[in-house]
Structure formats: C-alpha cells, structure tokens
Image 1 (cartoon, rainbow over the protein chains, first blue to last red):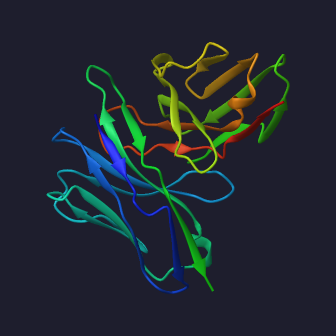
Image 2 (cartoon, rainbow over the protein chains, first blue to last red; image 1 turned 180 degrees about the vertical axis):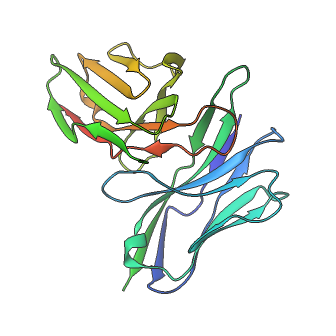
Length: 118
Length: 114
C-alpha cells in the first residue's frame, strides 16, 4: 500500500525567505507521480507542481520547486521568496495507477500548515 | 476555462432532509471525483466517475448517492445524513489516463448537518 508522510504539522517563515516543506512516500510501483497542492482557508485545492518518477530533472514552477530524491523517497517542496498569500495548508500527494482502468487514484498526505510572518 | 464550479457554497440540513450538491466542469475531462474533507485533515476519496460510469465507491454509506448525468456534471445526493457527515465536500476533474494529469478542484461545499 502506498503512503505519504508529512512530518511538519505547522511551519512559520518570514516574508521573502525561502521555506522547505517535507514529504516522504512509500510505494513499490516503479511508475508513480507526486503532486503538491495548496489549500487556502477558502477551501479550494490549488495544484502547484508535479514530479514523475522517471523525470530526470527536478520540477519547477515559478517560485515553487520540488527537491526530488528518488533513492530516499522524498519529494520536498521549496517555496522561494515567501509571500503573505502563501499562508495555507500544503498537501503532498501521490497518484496510484489503477490497473485495468483508465484513471489514477490520488492519495494525500496529512498536510503542513504554513504561516508567513510579515 | 480551467474552472470547476460547485453549488451551493454552504449548506445546512437536518438529518431528515434530502439535498443535492452539484459540480460542473467544461474542460472536457472525462474523470470526475467526490472527496470528503474534515477540518485539518486531507481529502478522502469517496467516488470516481470515468466516462460517466461509476468506477470507484470507497465504501461510502448509501445515504450518499452520486450521479453523473453527462460528461460535464456530477451530483451528490444526500439523504438522512448524520452530524458526523458535516465536512467540506470537494469535487474534482481530470483527464482520463495514467500520467501526470493533475486533478482540478472546485471550491467545495461546506456542509453542516444538524
């Protein structure tokens, strides 16, 4: 069974500083993908970044980058130059291919609450 | 248009009521999902529809009844709910297939059962 671990229930970061949110995963599938989602207090889940298990380079999207260490099974999210609007819950998630189907399930980690301090 | 809409935004219902949650997307996605999320917890998958057919039911109680009338719409019919069913209900959609297809989420419906 697949599992996602996020060991930081809450994090604080000073505005304009960089912050790393930890994520480790466990899977026996050779092909998998990892997502990061942001959920503000309004409730909507916002897709941030994706890393495939066979991707040679770490994914980047603007101020977001993913520090992917496959051997250690970690996929940490790095947010550079934090902004007040970055305060939210952050979920690491992994897609789980469903055999003989046309879709993937996505399982979510417990989340990290990030607070950006002015 | 990369938007998933959900109505209503808030819903308060008694345990004997019947209500429905609605979700709509116009991105051409043929996979649609219902999640339940309790406060400070991750979303939990309830149902998956693929090509308008129910593909996954994660052992959800029968008081929740999903419906996918067409490729753009997803409903969740509620009947005889319990107070512990109070939660944020999120709808999502994605492309069909195995790959890097992210799920696009709606803003959710905050349900309170009294």
